[in-house]
Length: 121
Image (cartoon, rainbow, N blue to C red; front, top):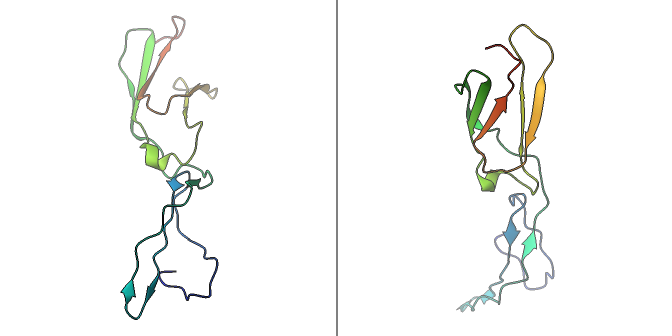
């Protein structure tokens, strides 16, 4: 809440973003005016959550005769919502039902290159 009475010892802050460190300060006031803010609390990190958005601008193609280059715009750090963030890249040759899948563990990586000499263009 914005304002709580002087007899309240605890308060709950809502609508915080996931996986963000916060610190809190308290300001006391009365009819004469407001005091100085307290010293900051210890930093507290909110819990992880699923990512808010998928990567954007996903595209595939290019590369040499035996390569498939898949690119995307990485998800911004503030929307990753947890540690261990990465990408699952899955694709399949046209006309098949079997997916080729890999995991890209770096959240800043904007591309994956698949190489296989045995797959026809």
